[in-house]
Length: 308
Image (cartoon, rainbow, N blue to C red; front, side):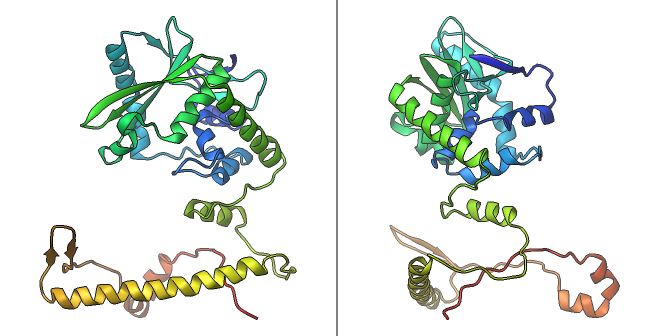
């Protein structure tokens, strides 16, 4: 357990720069392809750029604000004491593995990860379950901090408080280290974008990574089988979309002017709604100077596939 830098009084931008030096606990699940909210591509993009923009949202802020509360609830529930580490650590054997932990448990070779969760996600924590990307985060910390165990405590807003103890698993740690090392050496340090996973998040990273096209052609090699499959899927999706739309049309005819129809299994709604939209055509004709003033050029790349 080696200290990379003290986080006491460390500026947020500097803290974000230190995080780019390796793989953190919150990156582990994404690198392994098991984080539903983040991809390996996003981690890669974050590590190779100098951008230290702090991407934040209300859920993340609430999670930070409630961290102290979760830690206090853990101490009340277990009788254990925890303390802040106030440092970013690195694994001496694997320096690319970093850890900025929530708490360390006093008089025990263990740490604590504090989480908050929406009540809509309560089922992810039922029957002793812990989301996989959080489990990997805890095992990552066990490796970096050389601990025997790691606790994870979760506050499910308005519902309940839970905590669990994860024991050190050498086989799991070996697999995790192997995956993270491969990602760091053969992707980040080699400057090679990770393989896509079909997610919309991967779409965004690819579009950002290859933002502009360069005029010209290259040979399309090795993709005929996949393009055949894409064509097959496109045709099947069009058929399914037509079938889905037909069912919806039949339902609308059944409802007629009624807003809602329901039975013991389904509730179908077809309500009148109104929204305000800018009439761009009229604005351009009647107030061209205003239209031009607020006009914004957006660059993107259009992807198309045509059968030769």
